[in-house]
Length: 244
Image 1 (cartoon, rainbow, N blue to C red):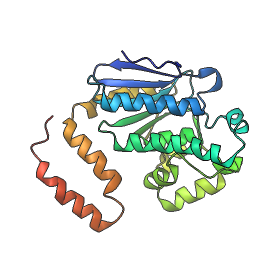
Image 2: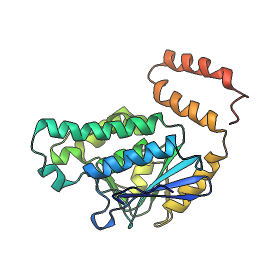
Image 3: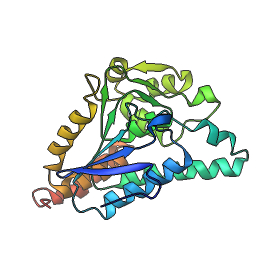
Image 4: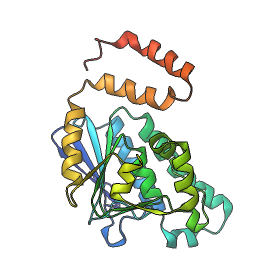
């Protein structure tokens, strides 16, 4: 069984679904430097070593998904180079998730702010509970959006809407976030995790090779029309054979 030494994240299994939980509820699971490293280690384990799971659900403990960057940690990192090192860890985390062979779902309740929104947007499917508050609030802190959200938010909501949300840094209700395409489905408060696990089970029943190839193609093959056609043609030879 996986156990991270800091206990900042936990992993449980519900059949062939792995539930990865950010576990610092007293602070609403901030995206601290330590949390970034813990998530990176956990995702590497789930993608590369865990043979039990075929889909992953990311959630937060204590009624909140993630309250965003750790303000106290930022204050303790005064230099430009140190800040770049912190961003590099977050960038590596997003790369690992996007390159991973298993689908990822986000189960969002409560606060989903800043880097928390980035983590929801990088998921293949994001389920949000009524009453949640979401926002790409980096600009309010004098920060440039990071953790891949410039790309993932544009992919989800479209370039124009993503631009407005990043520049304004305004908060959204769960209903508005679904309406804008930032997340996929709103459910009653407290039911995001149950719904995400059910959706994950459906994905886990899909051939694993098909899911892995499709996830990779959606990241690398959607930048231009010609690139999309090239990737579709290249992968079509696997149709009917990807049952593993």
